[in-house]
Length: 227
Image (cartoon, rainbow, N blue to C red):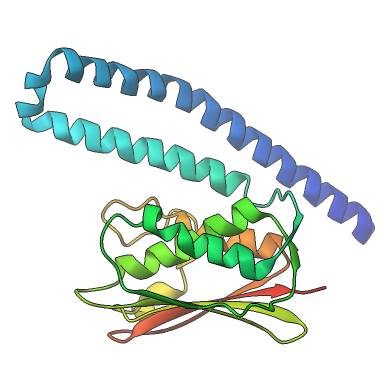
């Protein structure tokens, strides 16, 4: 079998897997949505159920399941891009402005976005999701006061977007599995956020680099090709 045929076979297998996961997720989502609706109705008609210890456990687990299904869908479709020409400087400023709605608590945030960044062809929605995932991770790593920063630059070959924080850093033993699906060290995490982010960046033929030091902070760098 030639290399071209092998590549076509691989692409076909990947697409078949994507469709299968999508169908399974859809079949699970329907009953889960109905169950969640029933729980909402029960709570509305019988608010006293909130006094039962198990009720909050059920609602928390249901929320986790809905989040997991949403993340599985994002992960499954993260390689499918709808490219458009982005005014990078303007787009990045819009992304940072939306943080007021993304992050419910007060936060310290700084950004450096030059006015003359080159335009790129990218999927605006998916790339925004990738940035939000990294920025949210940065804020979740902060202990007490701390700062998350975004800095963008271009060198003729790549657009570079650095998201850094002054948080707790990532332990060395976590790094090898950090981008693996369903790997999480958070109490309520689905383990798909960074995996989704990495797939989105790679779908744009880019790279996601990591620098971290426990007790000092973490920096993720997105490199997107300009040509």
